[in-house]
Length: 141
Image (cartoon, rainbow, N blue to C red):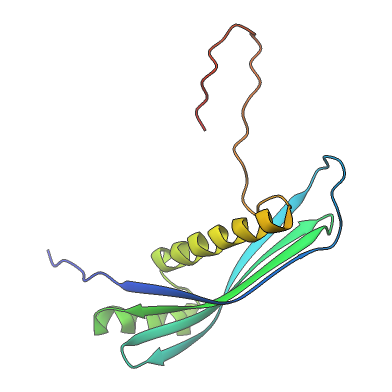
């Protein structure tokens, strides 16, 4: 069985915007919608380059976060050609690449949210309330 060459990914963030519109004075039910859009594919000398936009929108409209960047991919010519064809045909990219973009975007989004004193754009683990008071005080999240 032939082993596939690994893809090399380099994510470059070239734009970040975080705006807080309202001060949160009391706990409220805030919904955060996140989206990652892959915008365009550009062949480069040693691989492929995609541009992306990550957005986090808050409801009620207390804030928003926008992160833009590039994903540079290098690897074997066969794999790069397969990625290019799939993107041109179905606008799909491999899960490994999308996951890398999501990881980088969410990390930067959390840093921006902390700076703006708003909830992070990722769901926090919920700790279930115990019905018995004397139970263990350790938690698994």
